[in-house]
Amino acid sequence: MMMKEFQTAKMDSMTKILSAIFGGICVGAIVMLLYFRKSGEPYMWITIVILSAALVSSYLMIPKIFLNGEIINIKNIFVNIKIPVADIHTIEKYERIGFNIRTFGVGGLFGYFGYFNGNDVWYVTNIRKKIKITMKSGKIYMISPENADEFISEIRK
Image (tube, rainbow, N blue to C red; front, side):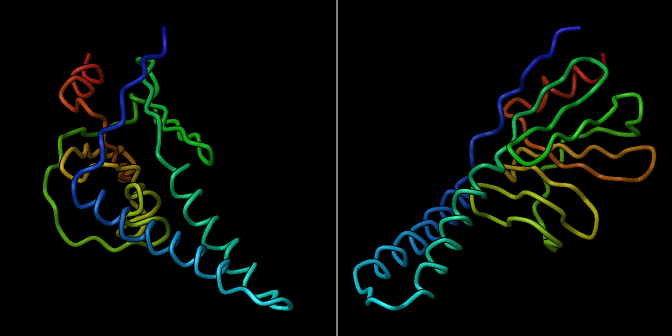
C-alpha cells in the first residue's frame, strides 16, 4: 500500500508566541555574546553552541506524519516512530488543553515534542488540533495532523 503523508498542523498562536520569545532571546543572547566578546573567553563559544543547538534541534523535531494503512509513521531528523494500526485501542480528537508535565523534550519551542506526563509521547505542533492514540498496551501518543478528521477516518478504514 502507498504511504500517504498528512500535513503537520500549523503552530497555534501560543506556540508561535513562545517560539518567537524563546527564539528571540536565544538569537539576542548570541548576538550580544558576539558583540561584547573579549579574547580569551572560551566559555562564550560554549554558550553560543548550546543556544544554537537548542534552536536548531527544536526546529528539527517538527515531525512528518505518514500512514500506509497498517502503520502510522511519525518521523523527524531524530526519530522514526512506527505505530501499528492493529495495536491501537482508541484514536480520538483531543482538544482539551490542560496542565501537562514535560518529562523529557521540548515544551513550546516550535511545538511540544518528547515525553510528557510520564511516558506519553508527544509530537504536537498545535495544541488545539491534537489526536490522542491509546495503544492496547496503554501507551499514549499525541500528534497533530492539520486535518484531524481525515486522519482519523483513514485509520478507521
